Image (cartoon, rainbow, N blue to C red; front, side, top):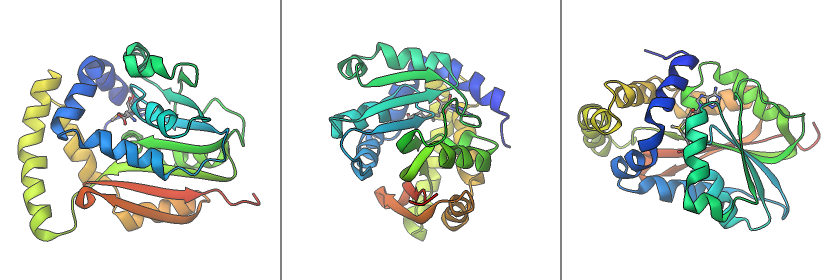
Length: 236
Ligand SMILES: C[S@@+](CC[C@H](N)C(=O)[O-])C[C@H]1O[C@@H](n2cnc3c(N)ncnc32)[C@H](O)[C@@H]1O
């Protein structure tokens, strides 16, 4: 069952302090690799402003700074505790002059239209009930020609791999994740929300409906994670 936004916020507030460890442990450190690839997929014109929505503890923002030495990143999230954990990390401090973490809601971004060369969101769009509204907000705040990258989980298409992965994802990950996060629902919700998310084709259509052109997708680790892309029309 879908969660309301205030429930999502409460959940991340309660798991913020162990979030990075859980992610890393449960994905066998694949999450670090996925975010690195996402940062590498960004095409930035030198000094660029990048919005990282649902930035959480700022992992994507850090990767972007690592790979794009002249980029500045604004990381936005509606969970104050996730942002606090982010600011206190050693690797964040290394790039602190180029990353600004700020409270905000992806459904109504506190930025003027045409503010950013690129926008990213990793493992966040699935949690936003008004997803199409969030996509329209991305479109609004991007400059013409700006690039949107969205990373989300999925199940591998291959029937054998998909079947094996589902055993892990549906039966092992929820109890293990719930135990690590000391909740009885956070990782059960993860599995449900991934299954409830639109198919690859449907989501590419949603990206197109928000106004983006050249939609595309890059599958990582046999399709366990996917990076969706859209470009804001250069003449809009
Ligand atoms: C699974 S975490 C992903 C964090 C980070 N992007 C990463 O790669 O680890 C999802 C984040 O989305 C944030 N979030 C969910 N809905 C949001 C909304 N409507 N506006 C802002 N942040 C939101 C949550 O607070 C949480 O920090």
